[in-house]
Length: 213
Image (tube, rainbow, N blue to C red):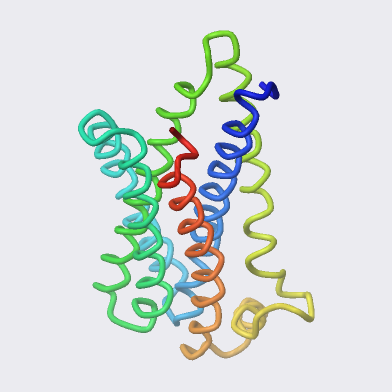
């Protein structure tokens, strides 16, 4: 797998897997917290999260179809760029808007992000010969899992840390009996969006430039 002919391809597909996993867990681990920081009750926040995550099913289905229709690189790139746009809209606008905006942009984010993930699962084995297919795909998935562990820790520090975002500190105080406020959502939304949009755009550019050729 580290021979000259496959080394560059392995490193690039590892990077794409890491960035997609990082972006997904950056958003969806913190999604209920983000909604609560906007002032929505706990039960309603998890209800929104459930509706948003259901869009993942259609994202997988669309990706499976388009991989054969458009080709692997175009499909993956399209879903990654779509994910970045949906993340920006959700993080910077929808959280401070209506419930309809939250659900629509959240579902778009879920649809595109999981569609990209589905395309990766289909594409990665094709990059290796039969002898290397198992180890190549497994190593790429393992790198992605490492990124998924790091993502929620790097995007937002824990509330007890002095470096935590003010919105998260206020949310932490609410669980301890503090007053609920709606004004704390903006910082959290921008933090999550920054952690999500940049990796998605970078992964999309890697795919477009031939990482998956």
